[in-house]
Structures are given as structure tokens and as C-alpha cells.
Image (cartoon, rainbow, N blue to C red):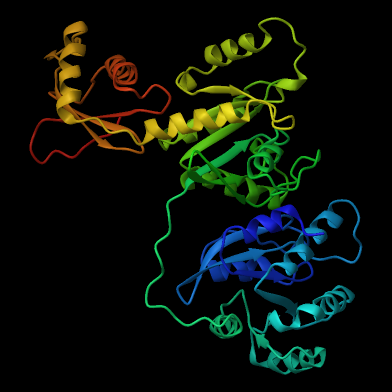
Length: 456
């Protein structure tokens, strides 16, 4: 039976190239080399990759879907069984299969996979990896004994033979080089961040309608950033499921260290971040640090309180949790709070509506004339205070970007300009201009020539 996530890959309408092999043959290194970025975590520890990792890739300027898979094992118990099942399932729908092997040894797992691939032999390329010096060239000939006509030697770590692999793939898939790639429709990117076991993968699977991420009670199950896709209100979404973020002193494995760093980097890739919080635990100090990173980058943030089905049912219990969050974390006073149960599917549509509202505000633009009409009203209601050199003045302002939502105000003196008045301007912008649920950055610049802008 084909995995539901695998079927969803086919629905994207792109040719699929799958990389398969046993653990630790360099699949993720090859994957990163081909997509030209560190998308999958690479480590010498076997079994690092667990989920399928799809990434759009230009092969001869044709858009294809490159899929990295977890290592196929003979001993299939527990999570290894799930990983192997996912990896083998992708064979059914792939247009091309790159079977990666290590030139220095052939194991029982290699032999098993070689036999499994027999019925797909017309779309298989045997890629013999780690051929990184001339002395290893002679080792490659032994791999012809398996009877597959398409075979290339390469070193994914050093980039040797990558061009030959791409040529072989284009020939197998009957593709001709294009002068330019086709333009792609923009997608709204949502990142799911939070502590381990808050339900990030469960929510990702609920939104995509597939087993996009492996779900387990064991903290740290998700390691790579897992991508999924879905549509809502006629808009295409990409969701990024990330590893659980713990405090530094509790991160004691290299793999988890890379996972956490990769999760934090998704903030830059995303348009909106869902900060997942276990409603029983509430927002903790670590969540606050993540939130500060999100706000600093001007990204939309939504506090998703998950597992509301586990609440006791006491009157106003949920409202008390919300009030405590607002009181303890004023930096998030603007961020919407959405209670859901990802497991039970409670209020997920409500959460999507909030995502849509945040997206609209992040992309909203205010005409300069309108802003300055409001600025006059705000200044009349509350004048800037007086400093040691006289009154501070705000002459005019303009919106300089969206997203992130950033406003620039020209003032008579930037030095010692009151922080309280900057907060006042932010609050007025939120209240009167329709930016109530997104971060608002206010920059100041002195109205003088050749004076560089300084951000507060």
C-alpha cells in the first residue's frame, strides 16, 4: 500500500526523482549537493533522515521534485519500520530512482534493496558514491554485476560526477535542456515551531491530510525541516514542520543541535510562524526567546495553544491561560492566540482564518498622505515630550516596507528620542491603520541631508 504522503507528492504535478539507499551512504549529502543548499541534515550517525524530504529542483531548467529518503534497514522494528516503509513506498510513484551505494562495501541491506528495485529497473540509476580519488575508480566495475544498465560513479561530498548523474537523469526522463526555467506561482509559507512534543507534526499532518511527518511520543522524532503543501481560500500553502526547540544546555546530541539550528533558520524562510504551545504547560521562557527572534525579523506570529481537548472543563480555564500569557509576555501583546486540538481536528479552520488575516495585514500598504493625516491627529492628542534641547518633533512619516511592516518617521533629533513615544506611534499605527495582529517596526531619521538612517 502506498503511503498517503507519497501520493500527495504526485499531486504536485512535477516529475519525481527519488534518492534511496541504506543508512549512511551519503543520500542527504547528494540531495544537498543537487538542490545547492543545506536542506537535509548530514551526519555520520546512521538513520539521521527519517521523513521523506521533498524539494523542488531545476534539472536542465525543468522543475522536478527531488526526494531524499530515510535509510532502508533489514531490521525493521519501531521507528525503523516506519522509515523503511516510507522510503520504499516512494519507489511506486517516482519517475526516476537514484539507488545510492558506497563504493567500499556492499551490505545485506544493499543486496535486499537491489532485488526490491528489479521491477523498477527501467527507471533506476545505480550511483556509486564516495569515489573521491583515482584509486577507487577500479571499485566501481564490480557494481555492474547487478545488471542495471545505468550506472554512474560520483562523490557527493566533493561534487565529482554530479554533472554525469544529471545527464543520465535527463536522458532517462527524456528531458532536453531549457534556456530558462518556467515561472512558479507564489506560495504562502508557514513554519511550525515550538518545544518538543507540542503537536507540531500532528498539526502538519492534519493540514496536509497526509502522514507528512512521522508522529511519535518520543521527543526529537522530527529532525529535518519537513515540507508539506495544502490549499485554503484559493491560496497554495507550504508548511514547514521543524524539530522541537529545547534550551541549549539540554541539547546534548550533534544531530539535535543541527535540527534546532535548522528549525530557527526556517523563521527567515517563512511568512508566518505558528508557535505551538502545549495548553497544559503554557508559554515558557524558551517560547519567549523564540518569539523574540520572530518579532525581530518582522514575521507574522500566531500562538497556537494545542491539546485543548485535555483541559478539565473548568469555567474560564482557557481565558485564564490567555490572560496569564498576555501578562507575562507583553512583547506578544499583538499576537493572536488560537486554541486548537490538532489530534481531534478542533478549530483548525478557525486557525487558518487567523493565518489569512495575519497574511493580509503583513502585506498591507498605507499611502503616505493617509499616514501623515493620522500623524497630525496623533500629535495633537499627545505631543512629543520636551528634552534638554527643547521639544522633540515628528515632521512626517512613510511606510517603507511590507512585509516586514516598517514605518520611517523623520524627526528633529534622533538622539535620546523618547522610547515611550515610539511605543505610542506603534500603538496608534496598530489601532488606526489596521496592523493589529502583526509586528510593527518604527525607524527614526533626522531630517538632514546625508544623514544615514538609524534603526531603534
